[in-house]
Image 1 (cartoon, rainbow, N blue to C red):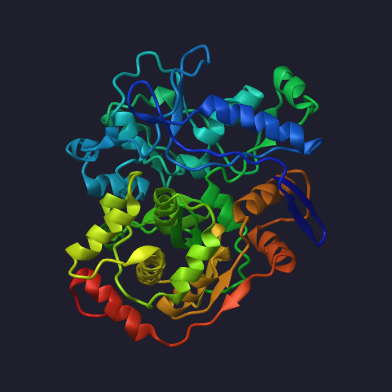
Image 2 (cartoon, rainbow, N blue to C red):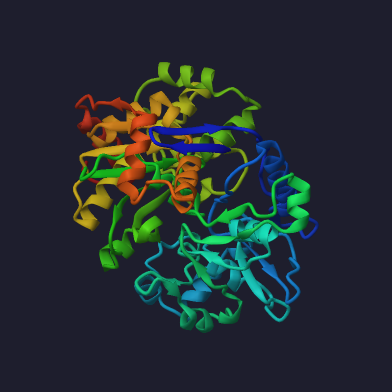
Length: 465
């Protein structure tokens, strides 16, 4: 994406797009073809033409390991690989869940970087760990470092000290020497290596700027929230990140038990949120059906009965790739509900279930943080799903403001622009520019909150909340 930022101007142009997904390697595991991704990055920079700066964001958790010469030892593992099965329990026998949370403030996910590293056979040949965006930045500039928003997702980061938790790393046999120096969003990573300049046609003086390199951190920058508004956000894509923005972490036992995470945001903020399995259920179902166009599927879902069967989207069965519709049907049957009949009902089940999960986590974020929620901002790909946004407003019983869709790219270029001298001194100024140039769509709740409470009770066997 090429972004243009100026007074009253915030524009994006898509210049290069390519598919990405984990690949089955010779070792039988799921990996990222990171060298292909690097080649696509170079192709995108060639297509972009002359730019003032470059910023890289990506998903969290996954990493590459370099030897002392700076050579990548192997393609990064995908967090969806099963090699971490059972590893969390082994780690927690050394460092208890309470201690882990007190230091890192991170929710338990079986694929957290800490558990992936604990599954590594040896670190003898390893000199440096680089998260995916930092690895791509290293190949552009030759500069080694770790941007803090992504580092905060590793479960090796002290969320209060805002530094690597080196003592914790050593406790679980991850050598602290492999953790690179930390950077903050807005820092200069470096300028382009000669071979990169030659391959892209860009001047070698082109700077690479550290942005909120965890894509959700960049997306939250571009939430068009009004100053002082009591808002929650949902960064809605393959995963849905549901939370509130805070000045300090929430490290209570209630927060740990609710599995809420405290991840670093841009400008020292805390993203207090819960990971929810998101539109992955829909995209995997589409793959199983051999369907590429989502529009007719959403039309069928619109016509399906509302609040029919629902599932817990965070159930472990939905994490790996595979026959998602069959798993959804099995989950409905296991909870005493009739399985969806056909494609439309399955899609409706997914969207109703996602809205239920959003409801649950928005309410939990407000209760645990002590921050009321009067409006929910939905950004990312899910913001263009009209049915999902309407269902979310009803389920949460507050207005939903949807958009921008490309929030991550907008947040990325806004941080770059500030580093280059744009008059964007703080998040409020960035968000005001987003709101003025990308006004969100508003969805009002229709007052049917009791129906959503009863649907949720079907999953838990409890009393409607």
